[in-house]
Image 1 (cartoon, rainbow, N blue to C red):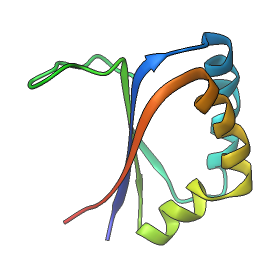
Image 2 (cartoon, one colour; image 1 turned 135 degrees about the vertical axis):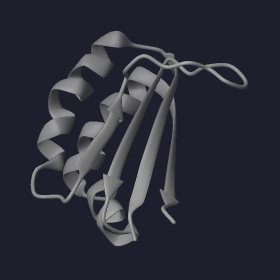
Image 3 (tube, rainbow, N blue to C red; image 1 turned 120 degrees about the horizontal axis):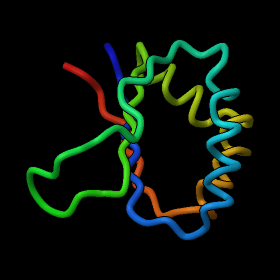
Image 4 (tube, helix red, strand yellow; image 1 turned 60 degrees about the vertical axis):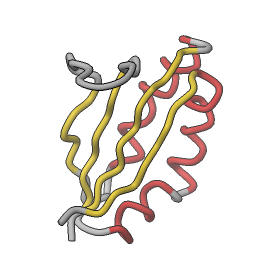
Amino acid sequence: MATYIVFTRESTQDQQELDVYQSKVGETLQGHPVKVLAAYEPQQALEGDAPEGVVIVEFPSTDAARAWYDSPAYQEVAQHRFRGARYRAVLVEGV
């Protein structure tokens, strides 16, 4: 069953750290069955406050999503995201 990870950037703290994250995150996706569905494209808030940005990635299963997210390669790069901004990340299974 398809599984999605939805990242919402709530607020930027350090743009330089985010720039490092952006330059390295693509490498961590190599070898993983992932499809990027949305990445910081224009958005319209329908309810509540809009986040600064949204990224949605699709994996074929929860196990595949966790294999990427929990991988040492991604967790090392994610440290730049953690220092660069406040994010929310949610894993959700498709129907």
